[in-house]
Image 1 (cartoon, helix red, strand yellow):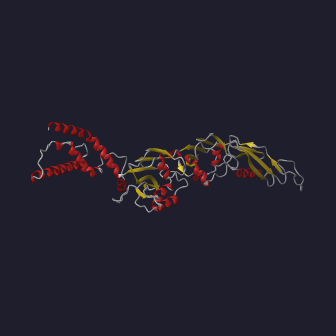
Image 2: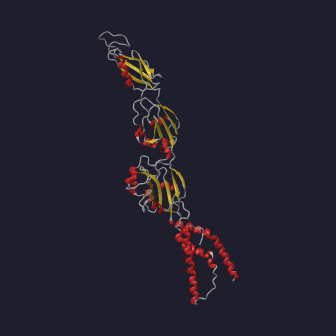
Image 3: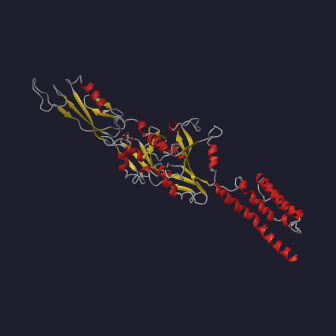
Length: 452
């Protein structure tokens, strides 16, 4: 028998073909020799027609339903079990059934932003290293060119900056305020009786000490107070990307935090969970999701002059494949999308093709989480490892599990086919091969009847 099938499947059909012929002709011969039934003249050519081939195909059906030549949208459940290394002991991924214990462990160890993939994306490199808190405290703001400096000098005896006083007479106003000065391009300011004083890149306390040292030999116990009257120099940071009003934001004298700068630019144009924020400082870039910056105070860092802040929308999605109503990419429209919601959004398992006990979710998980789940001999890069979670919706509890399991960006949901779907596919394929032959048999039978 040759239906154009692969060798292994064709051999099965040939054996069934031979078995059908032997059974049929054996019964006919026995009846003829026994004499109990009048022998009929058998048209041997008729039994060589595709009628027997159809019978052979029916006998071979149980074996053919497992042949790999049948079309499929992905691996079967048994193939996924074997790939997990349960037979070989050398897993290429971990297969984990979703249950109460697994959900509790994931919830206890998941990040503050559970919808982001642990493995990340290649495009995440554009945002630099994660963890804005790694920049540390902003520290005191140094004086920059263009800043306006105020200097106040206090004297207790002879006055350099006012009228001389008689011995034992207290000055009514011992303080002399110098006119505000702008730090020029040389980075210096001018102080009478001291001369030019370096201000650029220094703190106000440093300036006070320098001026005081310069006045010690000219007046008794001088006291100096230096303050920033106005920040007009390098006090700007840039904020751009997906904000409503990209521009340069001045850093206030009390300091400007990251959320303050984003608010000054009109806020993000997309949802916080859908937005990545990067800060570049002195050539280093760090980033975090905007939602995480809102939730974790340590990530709302103080900014420095010259910092660059960029917001970029990062569309989150999950994928669905297999025996489902909607194969494709689906957006994550809420920050806590559950697996139940994802199954519904992707059309769910189809009644005639999918097995509700074999719904699989593919993702990369941190090695620390998998070890907490008791998994060893992990594949991957040592930081994350491939995992397939199995959801069984034949178990009534499966819907509760699905509702408490959070879907992450780049998750892949696969609906494995049911075993009966292979039979349906084979029957459809067999009908395609045999329909022309069956039609020819009918015509031949009609001609044979008329000729007799």
